[in-house]
Amino acid sequence: MPAVKRNPRPGENAASDTKPDIAPDTDTGPDPAPGAKSAAPAAQETVPPRETGPRHGAGRGPTPAPPSKASGLGAGLLGGLIAAALGLGAGWLWLDRDPRGAEFDTRLGAVEREIAPLADGLDALRAETGTGLSDLDARLGATETGLADLTARLDGFETRLAQAEASAGPDGTLAREAVARWQGEVDALRADLETQAQEIAAMAEQAAQGVTQAERSAAQIEAEAAAVAARARARATLAEIEAALETGEPYPALLEELQATSPAEIPAALAGPAADGVASRSALIESFAEPARAALATARREGLSGEEGGRVAGFFRDTLQLRSTTPVEGATTDAVLSRAEAALRDGRLQEVLSELDALPEPVRAPLEDWLALARARAEALAAADTLSQSLTEN
Image 1 (cartoon, rainbow, N blue to C red):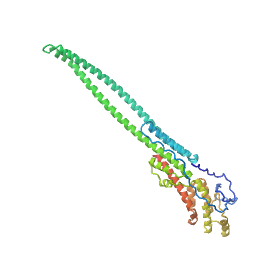
Image 2: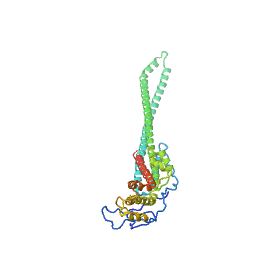
Image 3: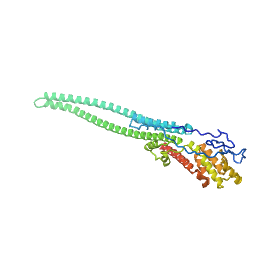
Image 4: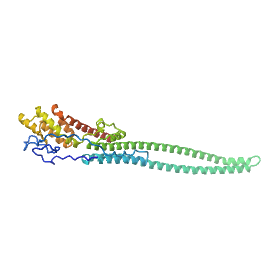
């Protein structure tokens, strides 16, 4: 992907009295204080116009592979979350760190903070479930041992009863006496067996409830983690789209990926220009001079420039195509254009649009094509910011 050009900061280039319009205007000196007298006339340009035009990105680089999807509870799910977070970091690296670096640092930190509690909750659930099952296994083992003892005791009674029956007299007297002696012990054994059976049934029900609750908790954590992963992937994709907006490259594949992962609706201002991209800031700066000269010439011909000096001075200004290239205070067309150009170089696109929209309609007409490109860029950037806030809040 082409690197974004760094715009000159105010004060880097010294203003000159006049400046031929051979290369894109670069002077961005500070505005003179209101009410102060100028020590020298504002810098002017005198060279006839040349053909320039907004340059869109010629083509975007290879589309990064989409982050892996969360695939269930455990390592696969956490791997999807981590991959999404790394995707957000990769999208951040597409952009120049100034001025959006801090914003993407904040987004990446937010994703990490969302993922951490889910991972901790999953580990805690595993530990709790494992401990509960271990306790249940121990109790079941003890119960089985008790049942084995009772079974052995019953087997012993059966043997003794059989011996008693074998040793009974013809009238069965000894057998009845033996049964009478052992009847209480047999009843006690039966009561113990019933108690053990009830305990086993209760433990089985408790185990079933514990498993069901664990499954519900795991499903809830998995759903929450999947939602976090989807938002993280959407933020990572949005970061790449914002990088494309900076360079002017098309982003149709990124838009499709964003539509597939974003829980929020994609604004039309962001989806509309995906196929062709929007004009980059550097392209708007380079293409501003020609329509600005045309607008100023129209204002002077129509008597709408607001400049003093009469027709003769206006004729010479128009003929020489003199135009201020440093910010000038005042309501003249030349002053408005100079402030708009300075704001454009500083990246204050909304201020540019506000300045130019205040011009009379005949003067603004030569700027309409340029304004359409500038508005598309401003609206796409605003839509991306709105969507980013929505993904962060949700």
